[in-house]
Length: 358
Image (cartoon, rainbow, N blue to C red; front, side, top):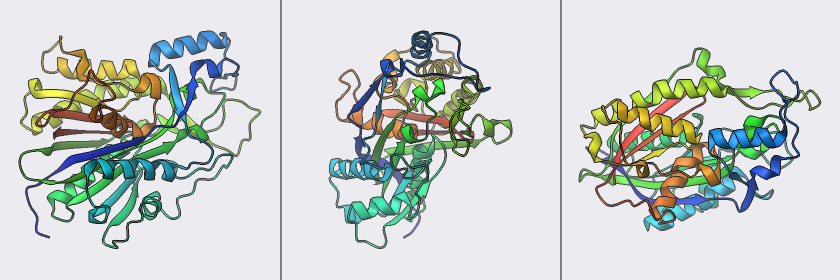
């Protein structure tokens, strides 16, 4: 194919949200310890109440034991293809973002052989050998980085249509004795993008990696409880460090991306930001607008799903797009021609942003 000036344009979306609801009350009998394996002295109910106040999370979803990350990815992907109304054999690339592969219930080992993308292609029964399937590990911003990859391939003339999926079963890699683990959840989201040359689609992108001391902000480590098997590793995070990093870096990255698109901030209709922490996301968007000297803005510009779905890492943004696009959040609408900002931050530490015209 010859290079062209086309943009990757979202034409379909789908998601898989597990049915099992895990409310905050589920953790009332939990025993939480700090990073030094010392018991948290505050009553568990008080710990949970403070957690909800800070994060905005009231409940989250966990996958059933019979489903793997690749299974959820396949369901979301199939729904996105159906929503797009395209022939699945016409997909040139399948990009699956995740961080932990397929972790079976009760198993300690991550399975990435073959790649989750290959498994998704198999489950979708796509026979076209020219449909290339590969995984992308980029922390929570992985799905958005997949969109950036797809746009690059489309602009280069290498692909015309791509499927980008984000999937994670975080509930199987969490430390039950770490209060931070209440943040995370399971789920999958997907979009189909295709080449478009009428001014729609991805207008600009930005990606950053800070890998000095920032690499330790999100990592794998031992349980906070000295009684658990020391050979196993769990997701660990330095919440305050992440919060400060995100507030310093993400708004600037968003502004850089918007300016690069030559779009005025007044044209932005929606901001789809990684659902990491309600207070943090609100602070990021508030600081973004202040970079333009704006202190008052429409709070409905930022759809939020974290309150009931928690933080499903790479799945949060595509799931949120699907929920809005399918009318699940009536107060949020997407019209043809609307400019939307997408942004994410996560382990690496990575930050990325995309400006997209619907």
